[in-house]
Image (tube, rainbow, N blue to C red; front, top):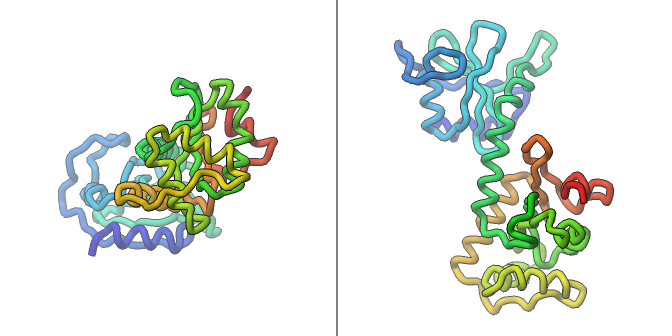
Amino acid sequence: MSARKFIIPALIAVPVIAVAVYAITSGTSGASGNPADGQDTPAVIEALTREGVQDLQPFDTGVEIRGFAGTAGQEPVAVYVLRDGTAIVGTRLDAEGKPLDVERVSKRLAKPMSEAVWSKLAASAWVQDGKADAPRVVYTFSDPNCPYCNRFWAAARPWVDSGKVQLRHVMVGVIRADSSTKAAAILGAADRTAALLQNERQFASGGISPAPDVSPDIARTLDAHRQLLAELGFRGTPGIVYRDDAGMIQRVNGMPRPDAMATVMGPL
């Protein structure tokens, strides 16, 4: 059985309490590599890497077992390698049943997880709203029929119009039957930015006219955007992603409160 198929469902179903035993033995020799703890990379860690567990980095557990922090999908993973070369994937608990190593794992994974999410968003078919050289970029999952997306677009105008923020709209079609065809009209336009602005400015009167159909390429794009929306944990639109002052990604589900706009968009 694939290790990835075993690990990810176990983590999603019981992300904090359960401990799953990963039944791969390392044999008698360590694998090549130079991890940060100065020891060879265990074979089980290389096996997990081949199965798709990413960013596995050693951390100090304070005891004899070796700890590694990584990601499986969007979920953090703690892997504990035992003396016999086998590994346990899950959460280590103290004598009172409280989880250990959460802070250690978080510190190891915060930057690589942020970079991975930002790269996925950058690779999407986003629509530019604002100057190309704006110093701050904010991604937002937008449905052409979403009233809260339109409110966010309007609330963001001072930052966008001043050149301080570039909004990148990742279009999805999830709210109404014609959301996909309206999104297709924007994504298929010769000037996608102008089409987006037309939809937002005329939102109260129905927005952009739906495309007569959705081409296979745009259908694949919308499907990929919808999957990314779910993967990042958003329940609807707008789903907003920005970088904080430390460069770590932060997410906002829905229209930000007025007092939170400056946190998302930065100072005016």
